[in-house]
Amino acid sequence: MSKIYTIERFILEHQPESAKGEFTNLLYDIALAAKIIAHKTNRAGLVDILGRAGAINIQGEEQQKLDVYADEMIFRICDHSGRLCVMASEEQEEIMHIPEQFEKGSYALVYDPLDGSSNIDVNVSIGTIFGIYRALDWDLRGREEDVLQPGRDLVAAGYVLYGSSTMLVYSTGQGVHGFTLDPELGEFLLSHQNMRLPAPPAYYSINHAYFQRWSPAVQSYVRWLQGGEDGSAPVMSSRYIGSLVADFHRNLLRGGIFCYPAEENKPNGKIRLLYEAGPLAYLIEQAGGYASNGRGPILDIQPTDLHQRTPLFIGNRSLVDMAEKFVAEED
Ligand code: AHM
Ligand code: MG
Image 1: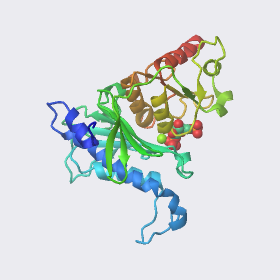
Image 2: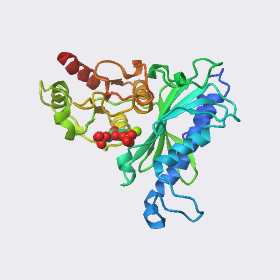
Image 3: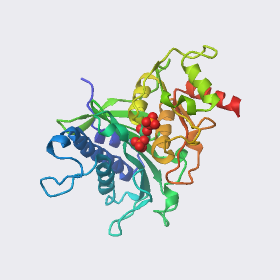
């Protein structure tokens, strides 16, 4: 029989010998938050029957929207562990400080608590994305600078997919590993060790409804993906869910590219650098792929603003390189 690994055992066995466990425990905290959010997400459809968001529930508490719930849950689980010195969430305008009564640790957490907002209310897969940085300066730890770091400096990143099963996928720079939640045991079990992007790629993912808003270079590139232009693209099918985590996860397993390019009135597209593009770019490189803003690596961008956006091309390197080539010809 093959070994059964819980996420806890896997993290422990794969931490460097010098590790003190602080970082390991931080990943374990995130796994706990993921289980709680998964439980809540699975019951989301019952809200219509048992009470709407905004209504008062049986305990006299107001029911929260799922994304607000997820945001608070991650903060509450991670704020008192002594492992973090600061957090930043897509749902919060400013950085979130560790409350004064708790110890400050040496790591900084960035997260998108529940991505795919248009899919939350319609029972379509959604996800959580996270990235972990080391504080820049121990004595000054907890500043905005600690989260405004390029993706290249991430020490770990991952996501949780709330789909037909709940999966947690993460990397600490030694490959990408995936765990599937057994809802009866309440444990994440290792299901995908050392995930690598397969080739040839199977899918490309882009919101075609925005075709008219893209630059001529991006339009040509998308025609290339479809088999047009010089006809050198691999034969692919198109899939687009509109939840970045779900689109990313499918493409990671089957090979492909996800694109959210710049648009006429949105020069930086829609995807957030810190909470979405950065952590996923870190994962894709660990899986043998590449992420670009069309002109260079996402991981090299120095963020200047907590909520800055970036055009995103992410997936098999051969496809992303080609996107850069089309964009470069226009420049
Ligand atoms: P959100 O942060 O409001 O959820 O928006 C991000 C989501 C991504 O998950 C997804 O890839 C994208 O928005 C889809 O956008 P669009 O509907 O414009 O194609
Ligand atoms: Mg988001």
